Length: 500
Ligand SMILES: [Fe+2]
Image (cartoon, rainbow, N blue to C red; front, side, top):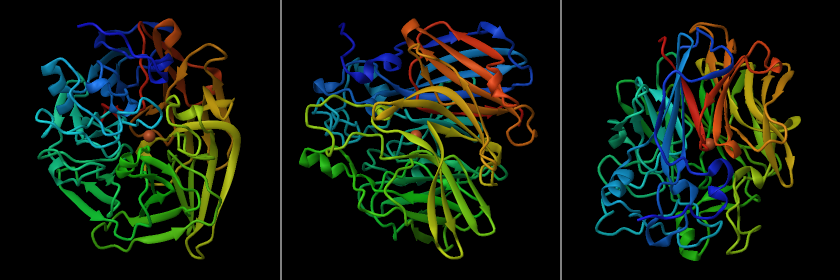
């Protein structure tokens, strides 16, 4: 049975679905040379539309199946692969050759359909988890692990073949995320975990509509999981990202709420309630089970951090860096009418690099804007997670109506705030995607290495990976690697170093 690609903004431009799996060995380099000391892989995952959803449902982006794209480097050579992630949902629908899942919030063909509502279960889907693992992929236990945002169990991916290994064996120790567990091993896990580069401990959590709103999960390299419910959490929040300091995981409770029960009232699962204060939970990193959790209410105007850069702690003064939005980049009932088109992320709101400063002795707090340039998708040298940092990387852009249009790569010295920028595109239609940092040597100083930036030149049905030397990104890429077909949009990803 044939079918067209549906209409809608979630199918346009870089979101045009990449409906095939490809292997490109010895990728063509169109400019420069791949550094011979790059040894590792850069992996990303994103939602990719496979076929019409069941019951003519809206094709919400977060409900689309995850696809992993990976490029590996060794001795000056690059190989590219992309593969669907074989989730329980994907496998069921492959067996039947059609969409099998019906979302409670998929009945509206408008901005309210997030693909985060409960599944209307039937005999086919009754015990099949709904996770699509389409938001992020990160290294753990020698594999890459793909997750969504508190929907579905983490799934391990082979870093060379990109074959799906399966649900991680520590998943049964995790709690439920936004939805009840559909089967043994089902769970929810964050899209933005952090980790201890020395011990390998993975710091994760799950969040949900009802109390306890957040459960922390620290996963040890041997697969043991320590868990703690945050019983004193102030309200339910989209707990998307955290900061990691030497002693704490700093989790922001921001008034961007998620409640799957709102669907019954004809509303999106998400809401923005800026009259609530922002509250930080300081969770002890080295004693999760018994350490004291400190709660700090910020005395600042309403604003929103979607992704963190990193944090420094000097003389009891905590600085939390991030692109700061004027409001969450999601559509809300305050702004949209039923029936309005889907509006995606950066078309709705804009962010600039900013800093929340908390004096841990006095409890005073402040917010600062550090740059006028719109920017998002912050990254750091992950070998220094939780140790304080100097170098921050972002995708930069310009204001476009009430949102922003991304076009450059930006490197910022977060101690001096000096920055470097390279404009990757002018007015050509293209998507500049989130970068990754890769170290020159496994023990190079912080920030010494390369930035790899994927670019989807979607109007030309091709993609590129640009490699910059962090020594000076203003010089432009030292290497351009050609991907000879449409490079579909992906949300996030990480580097895995093959040298240890
Ligand atoms: Fe994210």
